Length: 260
Length: 260
Image (cartoon, rainbow over all chains, first blue to last red; front, side, top):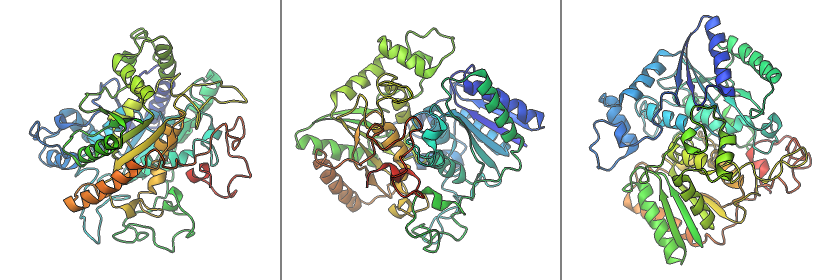
């Protein structure tokens, strides 16, 4: 397989840097091709603005989605964005690797998503009308590719358990897994989460590394999270709410959007 | 009251810009003092890196949390960050206003949080040991202040309802409301969410504006979301999981962390 790792940590000497090394080695040992977009090293521009759309008249009102589509369809995106879109096209599997900062991805990676996910590529794809609301959530341009999160977290695993104070990790990651990966069509693999990241003894690091090697060794066969496809029959149109027969009617929240 | 609005949209001629105007006028009409941090206009540096810590030796390994605390306690933060921290100190109420992009805040605002929320100010506050895990989730330096989200969303409200395909809006906002506002001590007010933001007729805009004026007119008396305080007796130490008597034992997810 062809694997793209989008890496968002400022220092390669960090735990994240060490895990990246473990990941790249394992993937290559298994015969995969690997590319890494090391966003800090690339000095990635994190903020989407009018400079991103080469056909936008400076100073005119910026409607981000419209400008994004206008630049995408007319080949007026900047070189750095085009290069990342080409890597996305190349890859069979995309891994976002980052430390969980304030319960989400670092701004530099969020800005990668905002700039690289053009309208026409990652959203606004397919017909949008009263009976069809685009090719998204399971369909879209990235259908057939696999996406996965590889993250480190400062707190301990119990803080992120089903009843943990920070909220269950799978719910905290839902806006990313479901909203950023599944939305444009990725099959979303179970994330790999390293806890208690701030102070880690070498022995514990070795244990995590071994688990990571095993996880990645199975990357081709790991079962994706069974998110319900928007156009798979589970949702009412145009409200896009789950049909009444799905789940307990008193049930609510993210887990309803996963097939049992 | 003193109200700080942290505004994250690239164009003041946008729907967000118009709503900001409505908000500032209403707050001032009600006698409040208002400051606005317009992040795009300020060309806010969105990415946290070694340049943020003036006492950090360039090229040495960057451990972000440690460096953040080191700079905070030694007055070695950059001027732009110090200015925002002073506004935070000044404010009784902080409003984050932004368009929901990819189910979270724009990178420029995420970067504001990462850079302005220093260790020692927003986290790493209070004793951390086996029986106490800091002053956070309801305690912390921002205790006594109110925080609120004012957001626009492209999709319609049904897409974000209890059984909507994107997930319930209150769950999508939990990582921000609970993880970014409640964590350092803010009382979190109900968010104000404008739906179907991409194409809005003047008449509909007027309806939203009226609702916003009313919401803000009540900003001093609005009841905060009743998140459970970490140190309020509901959690087991040191696992920080909810005590067994709280909620249905089969229940899970973010809503458990709100008092019924």
